[in-house]
Length: 481
Ligand SMILES: Nc1nc2c(ncn2[C@@H]2O[C@H](COP(=O)(O)OP(=O)(O)O)[C@@H](O)[C@H]2O)c(=O)[nH]1
Ligand SMILES: [Mg+2]
Image 1 (cartoon, protein in one colour):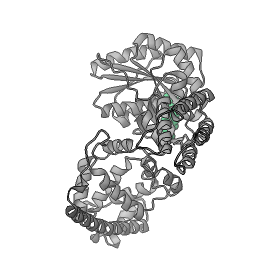
Image 2 (cartoon, rainbow, N blue to C red):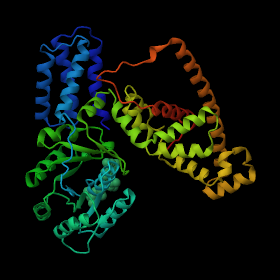
Image 3 (spheres, helix red, strand yellow):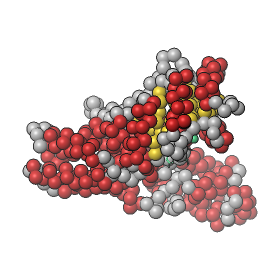
Image 4 (cartoon, rainbow, N blue to C red):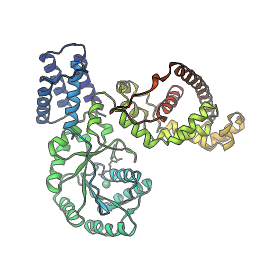
């Protein structure tokens, strides 16, 4: 995501860092580089001009912070102005005090409406809501089926009706919500290849009839500046409350993300980061700005890990590792947990200072969702519980059976068992180093204590352990694509 932009801006600042004191000339040069980076990211030139003006006024002015170097001050200003450009604070959904809250998904064909509807349903479900999906894309039978599949994956009911009247379907879905105690309705609508009067009228009619609390425009970020035009048109016709910017995972430039709020006044509320149902994130302009500037995004990372990794499971694993009782069954559970996080490369991009490493790692991505992991999973699943508990009983005959059962070769089974053995060895080592560290901490006394302040990050005790595990996996399991 935003690799090109990120790299160009960071390059501009790298030049500044060498300087102790900054002249106006230094700052002007750096800002010119930032301007070029934004322009080549496909940000509208007027927006870039205003942005530069705002930064310059602060950077060349009196704003010098005593605890920062001049270069850091400039970076901080750019960080804040980038966040402002994208809307400042995260914008929330309008939730109706009288359920159901009605959310209307609109946008061009292929922008990701159906996928995002499902992702949003899952997200809201995780927040304790009871959403239902509504199939109001009546022009293609496949569209209804697609929504049903998504609904099934998210375990959310899908309201369909066998009539060719999207307005009526939307209207009837409210009764459905009342009857089934659903407090959120997410209405998926028909796509259009470009702005089409007839379909736009249909959206207006749906809006008039059901009075949605939230009209979410779904926009594909890969279309760059065109995304801004699309957003303007939809906003003028319908009055859009928020934007879901999809396919950010494939967007190296970031033009749409940076321009759309400034150009249309509509805030981005969510971003799509992949095809998976979990790949929808609440959009935080400040975090996004820091991510672009390469400061990492620890908060997002922690939140992601927190929502995905079941803390209890993680704790259990750590206990087992410490007691040297880690079995293949545990490994399988760990794999399944980690898999939910998505590609390790995505995670690396969020860790401060590791963003650059990510680029170098392309090609050797630890694709935790890839074929290799599926193979490993299949192999372990083909073992009996006893075998998973104690690998020493897995003789040649058993290996053959496991390979057959999992659709792999005996060599694959052998490889997995060998890797697992190596991993356990590593874990034993890990255990001893941890014990040593603990011992030395005790000697040092209270030094480890962190003072509570306003910048205290939420506690995430299981993350370091997971990090350790990922490290083990990384060094021992070259999951190449
Ligand atoms: N990589 C990626 N693909 C996405 C994202 N959102 C949607 N897609 C894909 O884009 C395609 C079109 O999505 P769909 O929901 O059918 O679009 P619709 O026509 O607006 O309903 C599908 O192949 C989705 O899997 C995203 O955030 N990232
Ligand atoms: Mg669709």
